[in-house]
Structure formats: structure tokens, C-alpha cells
Length: 402
Ligand SMILES: [Fe+2]
Image (cartoon, rainbow, N blue to C red; front, side, top):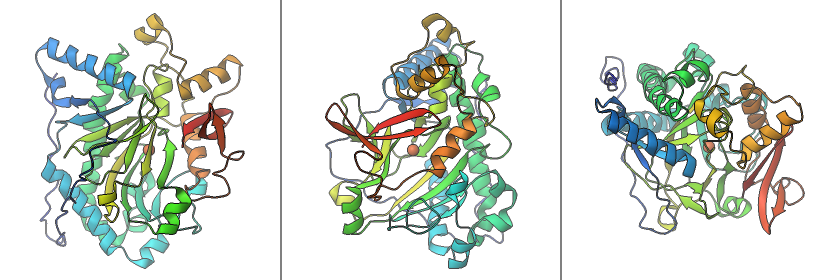
């Protein structure tokens, strides 16, 4: 394959751009226990002239997505300095966004999208108990109407933010989907052409600046240390940047939660529900949650940048039946969301489209501090002596560890 061009963003010192203080990564934790070991994929190997190297890479990816549903991506074309500039812009946003913009751009998750500014009082438009989480999310309409839909302090940097997202989707995610298409033994651009949504820097997906501030004792007690419920992402792939404050945890095969370690510059890739179904259950949607960090990081702020890639919304959720891998080996049905999909389709029932699937989960999301729903008999069940979080969306049950 021709070598992928590295990221080449617009200059930071163009006339009219205010000075943006550097983002200094906070110190890493000294805690060594409860960290996962994740496989790391060197994306630049996809450009190798040696077919043996490329074949090894595909095999590594195949194992990582079957075993963990989670992987680190390195050498994907963005330097650490370029990445830290994007963190600096996000930090600048949280230091400069006006109260007026927070009000004007306030999100409305009841509509099924996160678009806009999230206040630090839970995942509903009205303010609930404090959760210390602020976000700004860019969807297609936000890219198209920056004046009215993006905080004013960010307007001078939209060229850099937009190019960053374009590179993440159109270069990094496209190459990642090439790897996944090859695992499914389909043409290189199968997933990119048929499943990935297009038409804005994030397609039908979204880009997020998130800031997790330390929480008060009352919040920590009400949520039992949880910052975001255990969940799987509902889209195709999620690109999260590895950060020094350890809050992200994944559910291990031994049924324990493990922190994801910090790997400077690496991208953490999650497989979403849609990709689990497209792959006929061969890829596993990643179970993860956001939890309080180790003790020595409890007072630190965690800044996070994430791009959520979504599939074409109008497609009904379905496996890629033309995959030779699926034709030869069949589907794998013991896994969560694919199993539910199979139950519905074998009863002749209608399955949700990708858009319905993501919007219903956003519009009905609850907070970890929610005392009304986070109880056995409401949104929790006991399975084999373990408390699990259980929701049902359009006839599909989602059961996840608490
Ligand atoms: Fe997630």
C-alpha cells in the first residue's frame, strides 16, 4: 500500500489566533495494581512492502479484537506535539468559555444527540446532582454553523480542530477499517464504503472535548466511585487518546475491572455495538466504564479527547453476510449484543437501525448518582450472585457489569 501521509495541520501561529498556553500532562499514578495489559498495533506496518509483515499485522488485530475488543494504536500519523496542541486547545476552551455560551449551547440529550455543551450536573438538560463532567460535542450541524453552535473562544482554532477530526476519520479510521475489513476477508474499503457514515469531519458521529473535575464526597458516595456506567459504545469504532489520569477501565475475561494504562500518544480503540453485529459477533464490543482514579490522582483534573465514529444511520443493524469469514465459520452468538440481535431476528422481529440504536441510548441515559434507577428491580438485576446493570432498548436487552 502507498504510505499514508502524516497529519499536517494548519499553523498554530496564524494572524488572529490568540496565544494558547501549553497543556502539561499531569503526573502518572504510582499505583501498579489493577492495570490491564493491552495489545498495541503499529498502524504504519499496514504500509509495509513486505506481505508477511502485513499478514502478521492482520493476525495481531484479529486476536486483539477477539480477545479484548480493545487495542492501542500507535504510529498512526499524529505526533505527540501535534496531539498536545489539541489538548491545549481543549484546555483553553474550558478556561475561556463564557457563561453565556454555556447557556446558549446547552445540550439536549432528550433528542438523542449529545451536540453542544454539557454542564457538570448529569446527563440531562436540566441540572441534577453534580457529576463534575463537562463536555463539548461536535456533530455535523455544529461543523456547518460554527458561529451559532460553537463556543466563541474556539472560533479562531476551528481550522485546526476540523483538520484534526478529518485526519482521525479519513486517514486513521479508514486505515483501521481496512484492517478490520481484511480480518473479515472483505475488500479493503468494504467497511469504509458501506458502513462508516460520511458527510462531515465526523460523519454522523461526533467529536468530544471532555473534562472530569474531582468530585465532592457526596457525589462519590452516591455513585460508589463511578463517573460513567459500564457500557459498550453504540457506534462503529471509538478513538480515545490515552491520558495520564487513569479513570478508564475495561472488563477483563476474569470478570474484573482493570484500568487502561497510559501510553503517551497512543490511541485507545473501542469496538462499538454496530461493529460487533456487522462482524457477526467475531469482534467483541468493548465493555468499559469511567471510574475514580487511583488515590494519588483523586484531586487531578482529567482532560480527554474522543472521536466517536458512527455507521450510516439508516442501515438496519445486520452482519456483513458476504464476509468469507462469516460464511466459513458462521456467527459467534455467545456475545452480548449480537446474541440479542440474533434472538430478535430469529423471531422475525424488526431490529433497530444504527441511528435508532444510538439515539435511544443517549435519550434514556442515566447518571451513576441516580438513586431512583440504580437499584435491583429497576435498572439492576442479580445474575449468578452478581449485581448487573440491565436496560432494554427496542426489544434488545443490554446487561453489563456494574
Ligand atoms: Fe464509551
